[in-house]
Image (cartoon, rainbow, N blue to C red; front, side, top):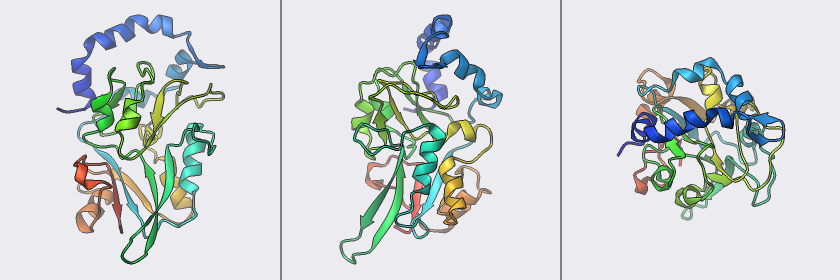
Length: 253
């Protein structure tokens, strides 16, 4: 079964119809003090309305040999771009985190960023009872805040521990990144920037820190840098045994 947004849309016309009927009522709903859905919609770039292309599959290739232990530039950039607090409490949202892995045989350690892996067959989508977890045609896995009921089945299903539940009221949200208490969230690959033709914040921050460990691009385009690298050099998926066909790949591990 495909998880593409196009397929999803075809399967749930009643949900979309309901959302359309309810739009007028929702327009005045406040996600957080000072942030209304209608204002977010008006702030959205027109290019986002053109829709994702099935011809594209956005992905990342992370070179562990370039990822510096102790550097958290990608994490800080993600927090800033998406309006996350950056707190370390268990209830604080964290869309990307740094992890350290150690090879038992040699003792070699490596530092890696870990986030939503944007799986082609995402378990979070399979278990979502409302269809709030979905995958766009271009492979980006997202959460529809309007229909997420906060059951957290997706949090339990994700083998990468990449999703967070919003426990507290939110303030000073970013117009391009709507969030809501009582819903689940995770890395969006900075979809609002990608739809404008820009790079995800973590990719830019890693380059500015002079590491250049994260390569972003279209895995389906054989002429893209990321596709050429994946085709030319060994890379791996985390938990390859699950056959999820992740959009995030790692080299050097």
